[in-house]
Image (cartoon, rainbow over all chains, first blue to last red; front, side, top):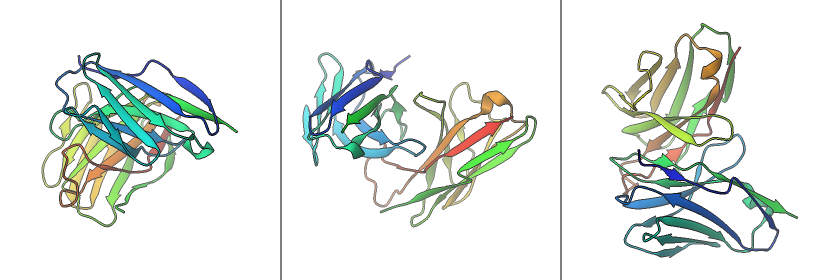
Length: 111
Length: 119
């Protein structure tokens, strides 16, 4: 069936560097994509979303890029901080109110 | 901001017993709540969609008789794991939508999760 998946389970980044977390999705009919941050033992926290008719959206220190041609989504975090350490999930807002989560990437920030 | 709470935050129960998890929207009325399950180092999997005043809609493969969902009020949904077994041990997360402030259909506030361990 349709799915949203990630390739890199763990990403280690030096504090202050930029982080890029990637996601591949398979449902070309998705209208929107969302990035969530999940800290250990907590629920997901919304970071940023992007509609399928856009290819870039920026937030505070974060940028999401969408390439529909290759069904690829990425989250860029500028000047990565220790507080950014968490698991990041891409998700697809598909169907009525449903959210389908990808497999997650663990971001480790090295002080 | 909107807050969703869960109770308990963690629970240990014996195999064969039932356990109830509560999900509350603290400062808004949630017509729709969602229940997810997350195994260690895995993603969140949607179990069911709970609508206030009506029966929950379960995802394929989720046993409705085992995972009882009740959404009796606009601020409370409960998930009861009946006759729990060790394989039911997981992190259960609920989320809730505020239809008055959340425009997009996918927008939802997540609770902190409940860690269930069945021994």
